[in-house]
Image 1: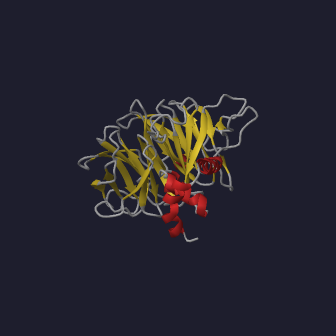
Image 2 (image 1 turned 90 degrees about the vertical axis):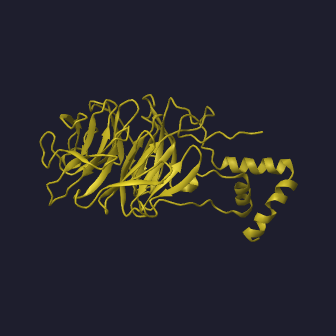
Image 3 (image 1 turned 135 degrees about the vertical axis):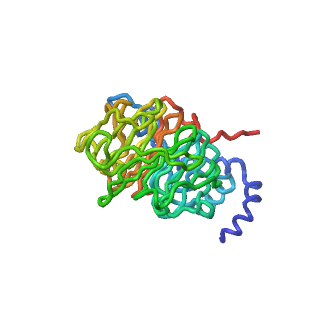
Amino acid sequence: MPISIVADLLPKLRALAAPALIATLAVIAGCAEIRPEGEAGTKLELVYPGPPDEPRFIFERSIASSADVIADSDDDQFRRLLTGELRSGTAFAKPYAAAVHHGRLFVSDTADRTVKAFDLHEQKFFLVGQEEPGLLIKPIGLDTDDAGNIYVADATARAIQIYDRDGRHLRKIGGKDLFDRLTSVTASPDGSRIYVVDIGGVLSDNHRIRVFDAHTGEHIRDIGKRGAGPGEFNLPRDLAIGKDGRLYVVDGGNFRVQIFDAEGKYLDAFGKAGRQYGNFSRPKEIAIGPDGNVYVADAAFGNFQIFNPDGDLLMFVGQRSESPGPGRYMLPSGITVDDDGRIYFVDQWFRKVDVFRPVALTADGGFGAPAKKTGK
Protein backbone atom coordinates (compact mmCIF):
# COMPACT_ATOMS: atom_id res chain seq x y z
CA MET A 1 0.00 0.00 0.00
CA PRO A 2 1.49 3.43 -0.89
CA ILE A 3 2.66 5.44 2.11
CA SER A 4 0.51 8.41 1.04
CA ILE A 5 -2.66 6.31 1.22
CA VAL A 6 -1.64 4.94 4.63
CA ALA A 7 -1.03 8.46 5.86
CA ASP A 8 -4.54 9.50 4.73
CA LEU A 9 -6.03 6.52 6.52
CA LEU A 10 -4.17 7.05 9.80
CA PRO A 11 -6.81 9.22 11.52
CA LYS A 12 -9.56 6.76 10.59
CA LEU A 13 -7.50 3.76 11.62
CA ARG A 14 -6.67 5.32 14.95
CA ALA A 15 -10.31 6.18 15.58
CA LEU A 16 -11.61 2.75 14.58
CA ALA A 17 -8.94 0.57 16.11
CA ALA A 18 -10.00 -1.29 19.21
CA PRO A 19 -8.35 -0.17 22.46
CA ALA A 20 -6.71 -3.59 22.73
CA LEU A 21 -5.10 -3.20 19.30
CA ILE A 22 -3.76 0.24 20.17
CA ALA A 23 -2.38 -1.11 23.43
CA THR A 24 -0.69 -3.99 21.59
CA LEU A 25 0.93 -1.66 19.06
CA ALA A 26 2.14 0.57 21.87
CA VAL A 27 3.78 -2.37 23.60
CA ILE A 28 5.53 -3.39 20.36
CA ALA A 29 6.85 0.13 19.89
CA GLY A 30 8.08 0.28 23.47
CA CYS A 31 9.79 -3.11 23.41
CA ALA A 32 12.03 -2.03 20.54
CA GLU A 33 13.82 0.40 22.83
CA ILE A 34 13.96 -1.58 26.08
CA ARG A 35 17.44 -2.70 27.07
CA PRO A 36 18.03 -6.28 28.29
CA GLU A 37 17.21 -6.79 31.93
CA GLY A 38 19.47 -8.29 34.55
CA GLU A 39 18.61 -11.05 36.99
CA ALA A 40 17.21 -8.57 39.46
CA GLY A 41 14.85 -7.16 36.82
CA THR A 42 16.75 -3.90 36.41
CA LYS A 43 18.00 -2.61 33.07
CA LEU A 44 21.62 -3.33 32.27
CA GLU A 45 23.63 -0.15 31.96
CA LEU A 46 27.11 0.65 30.72
CA VAL A 47 28.81 2.33 33.68
CA TYR A 48 32.23 3.85 34.34
CA PRO A 49 34.27 2.73 36.11
CA GLY A 50 33.12 -0.87 35.89
CA PRO A 51 32.68 -3.28 38.82
CA PRO A 52 33.91 -3.70 41.45
CA ASP A 53 34.54 0.07 41.57
CA GLU A 54 31.66 2.35 42.41
CA PRO A 55 30.26 3.78 39.14
CA ARG A 56 30.42 7.51 38.54
CA PHE A 57 29.03 7.83 35.01
CA ILE A 58 26.37 6.00 32.98
CA PHE A 59 26.28 5.80 29.19
CA GLU A 60 23.00 7.52 28.37
CA ARG A 61 22.60 7.75 24.58
CA SER A 62 24.25 8.30 21.19
CA ILE A 63 23.29 11.13 18.87
CA ALA A 64 24.02 10.54 15.18
CA SER A 65 21.35 12.66 13.50
CA SER A 66 18.42 14.97 14.14
CA ALA A 67 16.17 11.88 14.31
CA ASP A 68 17.77 11.01 17.64
CA VAL A 69 16.55 14.27 19.17
CA ILE A 70 13.43 15.55 17.39
CA ALA A 71 10.22 14.61 19.17
CA ASP A 72 8.32 11.78 17.48
CA SER A 73 4.56 12.27 17.18
CA ASP A 74 2.04 9.52 17.89
CA ASP A 75 0.94 9.58 14.25
CA ASP A 76 4.52 9.15 13.05
CA GLN A 77 5.02 6.14 15.31
CA PHE A 78 1.70 4.64 14.19
CA ARG A 79 2.52 5.12 10.49
CA ARG A 80 5.89 3.39 10.79
CA LEU A 81 4.33 0.45 12.61
CA LEU A 82 2.01 -0.07 9.66
CA THR A 83 4.47 0.62 6.84
CA GLY A 84 7.83 -0.48 8.23
CA GLU A 85 9.21 2.98 7.46
CA LEU A 86 12.42 3.86 9.32
CA ARG A 87 13.10 7.16 11.05
CA SER A 88 15.42 9.49 9.16
CA GLY A 89 17.05 12.82 9.87
CA THR A 90 19.98 15.12 9.19
CA ALA A 91 23.09 13.11 10.02
CA PHE A 92 26.65 14.14 10.79
CA ALA A 93 29.13 14.19 7.90
CA LYS A 94 32.30 14.83 9.93
CA PRO A 95 31.61 16.20 13.42
CA TYR A 96 34.50 17.75 15.27
CA ALA A 97 33.79 19.89 18.34
CA ALA A 98 30.87 20.37 20.70
CA ALA A 99 29.54 23.02 23.06
CA VAL A 100 26.40 23.00 25.18
CA HIS A 101 24.18 25.58 26.86
CA HIS A 102 21.13 24.70 28.99
CA GLY A 103 20.24 21.59 27.05
CA ARG A 104 21.09 22.94 23.60
CA LEU A 105 23.99 21.03 22.05
CA PHE A 106 26.02 22.60 19.24
CA VAL A 107 28.30 20.40 17.09
CA SER A 108 30.60 21.67 14.33
CA ASP A 109 30.54 19.63 11.13
CA THR A 110 33.63 20.35 9.04
CA ALA A 111 32.44 18.44 5.95
CA ASP A 112 28.87 19.73 6.01
CA ARG A 113 30.09 23.31 6.67
CA THR A 114 27.54 23.98 9.39
CA VAL A 115 27.03 23.88 13.11
CA LYS A 116 24.26 21.47 14.00
CA ALA A 117 22.09 22.53 16.94
CA PHE A 118 20.20 19.90 18.96
CA ASP A 119 17.83 21.17 21.63
CA LEU A 120 17.77 18.09 23.84
CA HIS A 121 15.17 19.51 26.20
CA GLU A 122 12.68 20.84 23.67
CA GLN A 123 13.56 18.08 21.17
CA LYS A 124 14.22 20.42 18.27
CA PHE A 125 16.94 20.77 15.62
CA PHE A 126 18.32 23.52 13.39
CA LEU A 127 21.44 24.49 11.43
CA VAL A 128 23.76 27.45 11.99
CA GLY A 129 25.99 29.19 9.43
CA GLN A 130 24.25 28.32 6.17
CA GLU A 131 23.98 31.84 4.78
CA GLU A 132 25.47 35.31 4.79
CA PRO A 133 26.21 37.04 7.02
CA GLY A 134 27.95 34.34 9.01
CA LEU A 135 28.32 31.77 6.23
CA LEU A 136 30.67 29.04 7.47
CA ILE A 137 33.34 27.42 5.28
CA LYS A 138 35.11 25.01 7.63
CA PRO A 139 33.80 25.27 11.19
CA ILE A 140 36.07 23.50 13.63
CA GLY A 141 36.33 24.59 17.29
CA LEU A 142 33.38 26.25 19.04
CA ASP A 143 32.19 27.42 22.44
CA THR A 144 29.30 29.16 24.20
CA ASP A 145 29.20 31.84 26.88
CA ASP A 146 26.81 32.04 29.83
CA ALA A 147 24.19 33.79 27.66
CA GLY A 148 24.26 30.96 25.13
CA ASN A 149 25.98 32.92 22.37
CA ILE A 150 27.88 30.65 19.96
CA TYR A 151 31.52 31.27 18.98
CA VAL A 152 32.74 29.30 15.95
CA ALA A 153 36.33 29.05 14.69
CA ASP A 154 36.30 28.88 10.88
CA ALA A 155 39.61 27.31 9.85
CA THR A 156 39.39 28.27 6.19
CA ALA A 157 38.21 31.86 6.71
CA ARG A 158 40.63 32.20 9.66
CA ALA A 159 37.95 34.06 11.55
CA ILE A 160 35.60 33.71 14.52
CA GLN A 161 31.90 33.90 13.70
CA ILE A 162 29.58 34.78 16.57
CA TYR A 163 25.86 33.96 16.72
CA ASP A 164 23.15 34.19 19.35
CA ARG A 165 21.68 31.06 20.89
CA ASP A 166 19.14 30.70 18.07
CA GLY A 167 21.76 30.92 15.33
CA ARG A 168 21.29 34.57 14.33
CA HIS A 169 24.62 36.09 13.25
CA LEU A 170 25.98 38.83 15.49
CA ARG A 171 29.51 39.67 14.29
CA LYS A 172 32.81 38.42 12.92
CA ILE A 173 36.28 38.73 14.48
CA GLY A 174 39.62 38.08 12.83
CA GLY A 175 40.82 37.44 9.32
CA LYS A 176 43.61 35.74 7.40
CA ASP A 177 46.21 38.26 8.58
CA LEU A 178 45.66 37.37 12.26
CA PHE A 179 46.09 33.58 12.27
CA ASP A 180 48.32 31.02 10.65
CA ARG A 181 46.19 27.94 11.34
CA LEU A 182 43.10 28.48 13.41
CA THR A 183 41.84 25.48 15.38
CA SER A 184 39.84 26.49 18.45
CA VAL A 185 38.00 29.31 20.22
CA THR A 186 36.99 29.64 23.88
CA ALA A 187 34.78 32.41 25.28
CA SER A 188 34.99 33.79 28.80
CA PRO A 189 31.78 33.04 30.72
CA ASP A 190 30.65 36.67 30.58
CA GLY A 191 31.36 36.87 26.85
CA SER A 192 33.86 39.71 27.16
CA ARG A 193 36.94 37.88 25.86
CA ILE A 194 37.75 35.11 23.43
CA TYR A 195 40.85 32.92 23.45
CA VAL A 196 41.76 31.71 19.97
CA VAL A 197 44.20 28.84 19.50
CA ASP A 198 46.60 29.32 16.58
CA ILE A 199 48.11 25.87 16.10
CA GLY A 200 50.79 27.22 13.78
CA GLY A 201 52.36 24.33 11.91
CA VAL A 202 55.69 22.79 10.99
CA LEU A 203 56.82 25.88 9.06
CA SER A 204 55.38 28.45 11.47
CA ASP A 205 56.64 29.82 14.77
CA ASN A 206 53.18 31.13 15.67
CA HIS A 207 52.15 28.39 18.08
CA ARG A 208 50.15 30.56 20.49
CA ILE A 209 46.93 31.66 22.13
CA ARG A 210 45.56 34.98 20.84
CA VAL A 211 43.26 36.93 23.18
CA PHE A 212 40.65 39.38 21.83
CA ASP A 213 37.91 41.65 23.08
CA ALA A 214 34.84 39.66 22.06
CA HIS A 215 32.79 42.78 21.30
CA THR A 216 35.23 45.06 19.50
CA GLY A 217 37.65 42.49 18.10
CA GLU A 218 40.59 44.36 19.64
CA HIS A 219 43.68 42.18 20.07
CA ILE A 220 44.61 42.20 23.78
CA ARG A 221 47.61 39.89 24.09
CA ASP A 222 49.25 36.64 23.03
CA ILE A 223 50.08 33.73 25.32
CA GLY A 224 53.01 31.45 24.54
CA LYS A 225 55.38 30.87 21.65
CA ARG A 226 56.82 27.85 19.86
CA GLY A 227 58.97 25.61 22.06
CA ALA A 228 59.01 22.87 24.68
CA GLY A 229 59.69 24.91 27.82
CA PRO A 230 57.20 26.10 30.45
CA GLY A 231 54.62 28.36 28.81
CA GLU A 232 55.73 27.37 25.30
CA PHE A 233 53.68 25.37 22.79
CA ASN A 234 54.15 22.80 20.08
CA LEU A 235 50.91 22.48 18.10
CA PRO A 236 48.42 23.69 20.73
CA ARG A 237 44.92 22.30 20.17
CA ASP A 238 42.35 23.70 22.55
CA LEU A 239 41.77 25.78 25.70
CA ALA A 240 39.26 25.62 28.54
CA ILE A 241 38.62 28.03 31.41
CA GLY A 242 38.48 26.65 34.95
CA LYS A 243 36.11 27.82 37.64
CA ASP A 244 38.83 29.97 39.20
CA GLY A 245 39.64 31.62 35.87
CA ARG A 246 42.71 29.48 35.20
CA LEU A 247 43.38 28.59 31.57
CA TYR A 248 44.00 24.94 30.64
CA VAL A 249 45.68 24.50 27.24
CA VAL A 250 46.13 21.24 25.34
CA ASP A 251 49.75 21.39 24.15
CA GLY A 252 49.41 18.57 21.63
CA GLY A 253 52.94 18.27 20.28
CA ASN A 254 54.39 18.38 23.78
CA PHE A 255 51.85 15.79 25.04
CA ARG A 256 50.72 17.81 28.03
CA VAL A 257 48.18 20.24 29.42
CA GLN A 258 49.58 23.58 30.57
CA ILE A 259 47.91 25.76 33.17
CA PHE A 260 47.98 29.58 33.18
CA ASP A 261 46.32 32.23 35.30
CA ALA A 262 43.61 34.44 33.82
CA GLU A 263 46.20 36.91 32.50
CA GLY A 264 48.33 34.26 30.81
CA LYS A 265 51.05 33.72 33.43
CA TYR A 266 52.37 30.14 33.42
CA LEU A 267 51.50 28.15 36.54
CA ASP A 268 51.97 24.43 35.99
CA ALA A 269 51.63 21.49 33.57
CA PHE A 270 50.66 17.84 33.67
CA GLY A 271 50.95 14.86 31.33
CA LYS A 272 53.64 13.44 29.05
CA ALA A 273 53.92 11.14 26.04
CA GLY A 274 53.21 7.53 26.93
CA ARG A 275 50.82 4.61 26.88
CA GLN A 276 49.90 4.64 30.56
CA TYR A 277 46.78 6.27 31.92
CA GLY A 278 47.52 9.86 32.79
CA ASN A 279 49.82 10.12 29.75
CA PHE A 280 48.80 11.44 26.35
CA SER A 281 49.23 10.11 22.82
CA ARG A 282 47.15 12.40 20.64
CA PRO A 283 45.27 14.84 22.89
CA LYS A 284 42.64 16.90 21.12
CA GLU A 285 40.01 18.94 22.97
CA ILE A 286 39.53 19.81 26.63
CA ALA A 287 36.59 20.70 28.87
CA ILE A 288 36.00 21.69 32.48
CA GLY A 289 33.12 20.19 34.46
CA PRO A 290 30.98 21.95 37.06
CA ASP A 291 33.14 20.39 39.77
CA GLY A 292 36.27 21.91 38.24
CA ASN A 293 37.59 18.59 36.97
CA VAL A 294 39.42 18.54 33.63
CA TYR A 295 38.30 16.29 30.74
CA VAL A 296 40.78 15.61 27.92
CA ALA A 297 39.91 13.76 24.69
CA ASP A 298 42.67 11.59 23.22
CA ALA A 299 42.25 10.45 19.61
CA ALA A 300 44.88 7.70 19.79
CA PHE A 301 43.65 6.18 23.05
CA GLY A 302 40.01 6.35 21.93
CA ASN A 303 38.88 7.75 25.25
CA PHE A 304 38.74 10.78 27.47
CA GLN A 305 40.60 11.05 30.76
CA ILE A 306 39.38 12.95 33.79
CA PHE A 307 41.80 14.86 36.03
CA ASN A 308 41.29 17.01 39.09
CA PRO A 309 42.06 20.74 38.71
CA ASP A 310 45.71 20.13 39.65
CA GLY A 311 46.21 17.43 37.02
CA ASP A 312 45.90 14.25 39.10
CA LEU A 313 44.26 11.42 37.12
CA LEU A 314 40.86 10.34 38.43
CA MET A 315 39.57 7.93 35.77
CA PHE A 316 39.07 7.38 32.03
CA VAL A 317 36.02 6.61 29.90
CA GLY A 318 35.82 4.74 26.58
CA GLN A 319 37.97 2.45 24.49
CA ARG A 320 39.48 2.42 21.02
CA SER A 321 37.59 0.11 18.68
CA GLU A 322 37.10 -0.53 14.97
CA SER A 323 33.52 -1.63 15.69
CA PRO A 324 30.86 0.96 16.55
CA GLY A 325 28.97 0.87 19.80
CA PRO A 326 28.41 2.69 23.08
CA GLY A 327 31.68 3.83 24.58
CA ARG A 328 33.67 2.75 21.51
CA TYR A 329 35.69 5.24 19.45
CA MET A 330 37.96 5.25 16.43
CA LEU A 331 38.68 8.97 16.02
CA PRO A 332 37.36 11.00 18.96
CA SER A 333 37.87 14.75 18.90
CA GLY A 334 35.52 17.08 20.76
CA ILE A 335 34.29 17.06 24.33
CA THR A 336 32.10 19.34 26.43
CA VAL A 337 30.41 19.09 29.84
CA ASP A 338 27.16 20.82 30.81
CA ASP A 339 26.19 22.47 34.08
CA ASP A 340 24.62 19.23 35.33
CA GLY A 341 27.75 17.18 34.67
CA ARG A 342 26.57 15.42 31.51
CA ILE A 343 29.49 14.71 29.15
CA TYR A 344 29.16 15.00 25.36
CA PHE A 345 31.93 13.18 23.47
CA VAL A 346 32.38 13.47 19.69
CA ASP A 347 33.75 10.73 17.42
CA GLN A 348 34.55 11.71 13.82
CA TRP A 349 34.92 8.17 12.48
CA PHE A 350 31.62 6.81 13.77
CA ARG A 351 29.99 10.24 13.26
CA LYS A 352 28.29 10.47 16.61
CA VAL A 353 28.12 12.20 19.96
CA ASP A 354 27.96 9.90 23.00
CA VAL A 355 26.32 11.26 26.13
CA PHE A 356 27.31 10.18 29.64
CA ARG A 357 25.30 11.06 32.74
CA PRO A 358 26.60 11.32 36.31
CA VAL A 359 25.25 8.49 38.42
CA ALA A 360 23.72 10.96 40.87
CA LEU A 361 21.66 12.59 38.09
CA THR A 362 18.41 10.86 37.12
CA ALA A 363 17.63 10.18 33.45
CA ASP A 364 14.92 12.85 33.47
CA GLY A 365 16.98 15.35 35.43
CA GLY A 366 18.88 18.43 34.30
CA PHE A 367 18.90 20.49 31.14
CA GLY A 368 19.90 17.58 28.89
CA ALA A 369 16.75 15.55 29.55
CA PRO A 370 13.71 15.77 27.24
CA ALA A 371 10.90 17.96 28.54
CA LYS A 372 8.16 15.97 30.23
CA LYS A 373 4.96 15.64 28.22
CA THR A 374 1.92 17.11 29.88
CA GLY A 375 -1.22 15.06 29.63
CA LYS A 376 -4.85 16.10 30.00
